[in-house]
Amino acid sequence: MFRNQYDTDVTTWSPAGRLFQVEYAMEAVKQGSAAIGLRSKTHIVLGCVNKANSELSSHQKKIFKVDDHIGVAIAGLTADGRVLSRYMRNECINYSFTYESPLPVGRLVVQLADKAQVCTQRSWKRPYGVGLLVAGLDESGAHLYYNCPSGNYFEYQAFAIGSRSQAAKTYLERRFKNFSDSSRDNLVKDALMAIRETLQGETLKSSICTVAVVGVGEPFHILDQETVQQMIDAFEIVGEQEGPAAEPDAAAAAAAGQEAAAADQGGSTEEGVAPMDI
Amino acid sequence: MTKQQANWSPYDNNGGSCVAIAGADYCVIAADTRMSTGYNILTREYSKICKLADKCVMASSGFQADVKALQKQLAARHLIYQHQHNKQMSCPAMAQLLSNTLYYKRFFPYYSFNVLGGLDNEGKGCVFTYDAVGSYEKVGYSSQGSGSTLITPFLDNQLKSPSPLLLPAQDAVTPLGEAEAIDLIKTVFASASERDIYTGDKIEIVVVNADGIRREYMELRKD
Image (cartoon, rainbow over all chains, first blue to last red; front, side, top):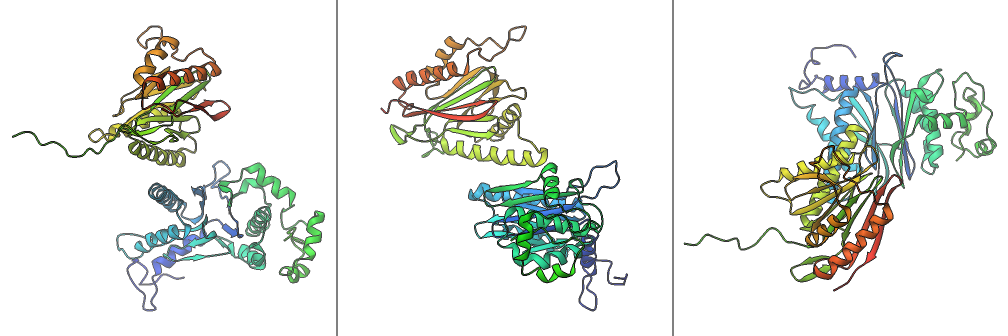
């Protein structure tokens, strides 16, 4: 995108019918460190890459618990994300107070989207520079939504946002058909694999990523570092340079049964046969 | 020209009694489960006790609709606290919050007489007692509600809590063990049920200690 005479105000249309300020806000999301989400019928897993300014500093918090049944992962201007998380928490608390039941996820994302839209139609505001992956469980099942700075929202089986998210998206596109019936642990495994895709060579360890889960009978919580590291070790998901990792027997047997990824398996040897069963 | 009188009251008294006793490493909170209005019983199985935080439990008698509203308010405020501080509220913190919440409605009060019990930051038992508009005090034991006039003198006799005005400051918590405190509660409610018509049916006893929170029940006179 290049600078042009229609991109100064959010309230200025371009002749082609575009709002450049909104599109620039979406660029901010693409610059943020990656966040991914995937869901099965009963669980949703969120994951993100932790970026720290320097070795001395702590990393940005990118995954927030909104309520027992809803969590959110953000990419972009994390300050905007923090503010929107606070809004979401408030909405959940108020809804619970009035109706004595958890706020349906679909309602929350609409409210969020409407809030974002307002900022695209006021000359004294700017769009939120953050993309949100909202993961939630309600009576109608498990949901994963993506909320855009433009005020649009979409429901996904799996999605990735932020820098180098295309690599993760490619991975998820190969596998998403299996997610619906995936077990919780396999879903987490897939999330870690997807995160690994965005690292492009860097070793995956629990200190540079955060994983959170929400599901039936499991309130939203962020997995602690040891658990994540154990899962990384157990499934031997390390850097791309590693040859086909020594597979657990189950994985070898299950890999044979994999239809969707079978075609790819033949071709790719970098990660080796992904130790996914399903 | 006589002064105009209200032809209805926004309040009702649903009766019942609450008691709390603080020990060295535990706290017992108890309330009967009868809910009444006037001379009638609405139900024999209503809980007046509410868990506000991991180590903090509140029992309230008075107007149960106001009590319910108060409990919901505190629960919502506790959630906000957890989001902001990443931890549960301590009992003394909740005690202050309750006081502020009650005083907020100083000119249309919650008709709720509360006792708050739990463990403080060091794991010692603590009990806080309130009036309807938020005046509160940390004490070793307390009783509120329709049976309080019968219960408090008996607790005074058995627990002999030192005056908070004494110097050096003396511990308000009782040296009694957990089992003895529970026994005392049962005795006290059994006696109160004899003479207070609004107290009876069942006692709900909640014990907060280092292992967590547990609940017991005891049958009382149904008349």
